[in-house]
Length: 277
Image 1 (tube, helix red, strand yellow):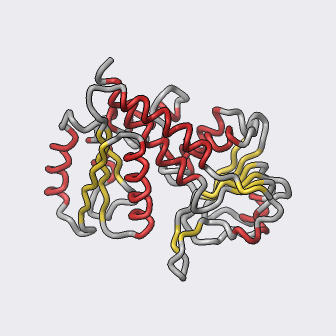
Image 2 (cartoon, rainbow, N blue to C red):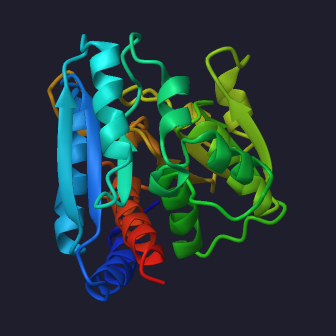
């Protein structure tokens, strides 16, 4: 089994983002919004900030308590959304139950949407039209390309049906002419369904849940999970030691996550560049 690391793809995307950013009259600016102290969110935010620095992108975090007052938050968000110096806004999900996801992303300026969260951008994605792609699904596609995998006619299984990864990634794989199965907690005999796939993408957020029983011999496995195990170590959804049947596996850390932040940086740089065309 080959470990497919994201360094090569991340380096190329970082270079493009930095060159775009440095060609502009001012540095592009990203604002990351986080609620609470979830360890996975903090890990992603930390990685994103490091990547933005490498790409000459200014990055600021706004952290709110999980029990923040909704109306106070939306008042602040409205000002941020209208700030022309801000080129991109990334909201880490899931949100607290008190904050309406629908209301937030309906308010968000589609031009500042860096992760395909607004209704306008999602509609374009599901219609197969050009739009800003969600960062993590785009990172998976770019790593599939890095591996030289031709998706046409291949069977792909995506474990997870969230709007953050699972559903948009399924649409993007369909655009590449793969035959896609979206799996979830109610899928009957989940390991057997996954064993039919040439490409398996895990996006369930459960530390090391996926073992070798889910993997078809020779399948390519892309682990999107970012989890903390009982020992406090950063791990994926896959139990790496049990993945010997796979032809390749993206490790955690050092796999899809490293590419995701590079995709984000490129999105911010390109959003800023539009203002100076």
